[in-house]
Image (cartoon, rainbow, N blue to C red):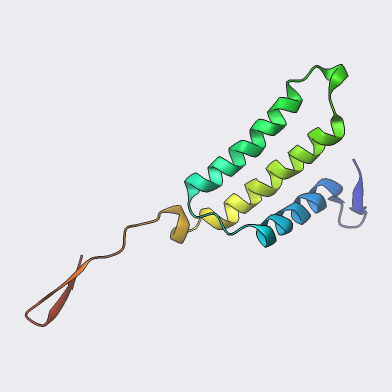
Length: 106
């Protein structure tokens, strides 16, 4: 396995996944919901799966590596963008009613 920095032992794959994540965040808006994030992650996974299921003698290892990096990047993006309260739960907006000058939230 290749390493960028022998002292920190950061695999090249991690570096490439972080670069892919940064490019995706710069080129595309944040995931709107967990469903959207999952769909993007699943699409990348399916592309990787196509390489994995190819006959070993005919596999394009460079393309398979790139797809694996994209899966890693989208999994990180999913974790960062939709596993929090704001997008992970998407609660409906609170409703409020004014009754005799008093605001009631429910």
